[in-house]
Length: 348
Image 1 (cartoon, rainbow, N blue to C red):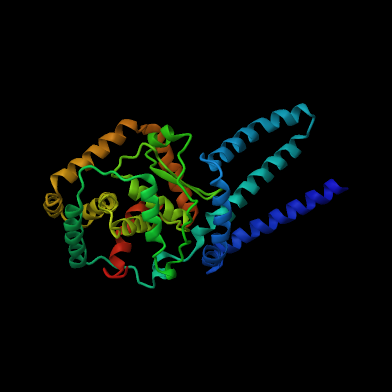
Image 2 (cartoon, rainbow, N blue to C red; image 1 turned 90 degrees about the horizontal axis):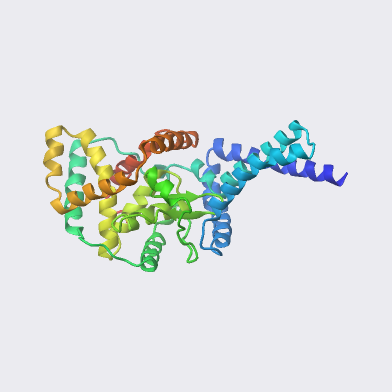
């Protein structure tokens, strides 16, 4: 009798939590309420728990769940369990994981857009405005150039967190905590093989950075992943905050990483918006040393990239983003330029 009562309670709670995910997904403003008033508490608890150990709890959970789901039917059959009971139990486990994903972090996908929180209208393309940005950005990039970047991990974290703490409240970012540190992955070689420089672990609110990152990439990537931990779901917005946080620091290493980190997205936008001759003319104004760094970075990751795994990862991640209201999929990364252009230069 007690077993039946517990089962009934468990499924009732599960259904209520699943219903709440639907509410936060489809009811206007609910996702923003979660991000501002619920997520900060959940994030603090989960990331504090994760901080107890130096390794990734998120990866352990995923591996244990996959192995458990594979082994459970074998054990259950040996114990004479019915296949319907086995399927029902496995479905229940997957549903609890689904709920954990969204309540732990994933409902940040349903929050108000960056533009609504910034109280600005997304800018439409204007050639004059874009070229002004391009000129100012290129001048700053060239002036910020650093040949050899070195900054300790502790100094990087301290500086970036201090900058995030200054972000205006209207943007709705969670305040970073001293105990939140980026984790390295057990599967780092696999991530390098598919071109992943870092990722957000939603089950224990852990940010992860690829430990093969080049020094010039580390500050920008760390700031990007920290933005996700602070409640940002959009890849474009995470790039926006990584760029803004890095270029507003007084540390020359972090500042240059910010400009350099934005460069690939500037190139993508410039190539699509300007003529070939205009693009070539602009590209030639970038310092040769920076262009060489760009080529060296590409060569560095090309050696580690696995084409088959990379295409599979692109396909899966593209589907994942679109299923969570990022309609542009992986193209969302490059949309950071529209965010930069939508705010006045003095907004910070």
